Length: 527
Image (cartoon, rainbow, N blue to C red; front, side):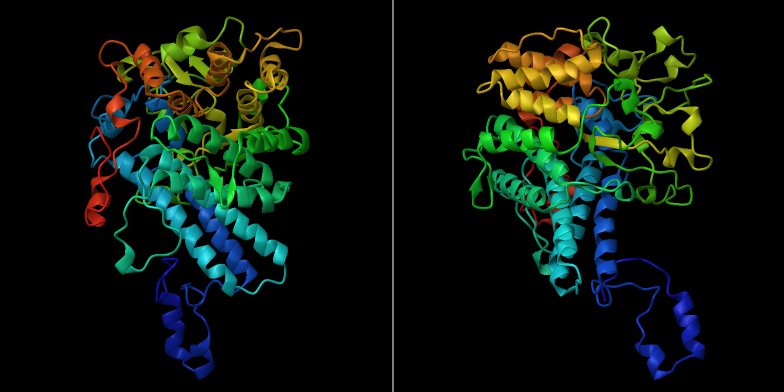
């Protein structure tokens, strides 16, 4: 009997000694949920869907690898940091594109996402056996499972490029999988997300915050399309257009999805950029999809770190030795680069919201204890004493992680429309600029060439500083562009984090996974 929850059955056994009647023995054990007595009711289906969402919060299954922190370190926006080169050396090597194939962080990223895929595949395999009174609810659950499977596969194909494509629960004899053609992986992601876009609800009630909507699926599909176009074709050498099932996704299809979100979703820019951040501003009108984190002090512990509900990037971000009435201490990972700080224009109010400039704010702390110290930290998710959990504080910081904001949809729309509707591109771009600088601001004029794209990329860098998008934007413009930008942000040792184009910007496939595959998986180039 395959367990889906590791819950003690001691109480059940104790009762059994005094109540061994036939009827009692035929009852399903309430404390031992298994596949044989689960996946029967709508409530079971809901709990299974929640279990897939739960994996979104996992950040420390192997090493410490919050998604945004890892992506920031890979980019020109941050260095690895910590207390020294021996403090999470896998992150330090990641910043230099020189990971060992047995480093914990690449393994943790891989395992967590395949755990989410397993749960989604298991649900999709079992759902037809569940009795639904409401067929619309069944359709929604299927769409949520497919959205999440597409989400996990997208992150895997970004990090590793060449991965197994698994769409069902595997038997023990099927565990040795080969890597799929990346084009097939991208098509499956698009198919899952396009189905979700067509079948998820438009509105998510406040009581269901954190669940995916039609708009989340459409926005993520647009992000996948742009990455497939820029990196999948440009670097991995995929030759065919992105497909969702039998439908080839033309650029006009993605533009229409963006316009649908802009015009019909009800999402909008929060008028004041500073009001996007902080516990009281979570799940706001600009948030299209965000990962929920809460203060659950009795959930998880140091032996089961993925059982926590908190955001690990928070404690990892803070400076060491802080003495301040507002800011709390942390572990000094992902110090923001001077390159990012210099990217902000004079007078851009997003700077003081996004970057904690220790010198400018007169912060008292211990820079000598902070490795690869720059004097800058990411402020959006910096630990603040007012939000500090009462117990198990390192495990339970309650700051949500935004995945897709309305501003991202606007800037993706601006980029997509550069070639065929410059007026719309300008409008979408200008909305983001004017939110930052005020309605009287005259934004730069976009042109349908590299200069226009540079303007959009600048805006994306400062708008989403610390949110983990920069690295993927760099790769979308090719390895030469990524190398130029990342190397320009590097400095003398220990800030000598430079790009290794031989890796194609990918992480190494964990050696344990290659071994488990019977060596059917092959290592990525450069490792």
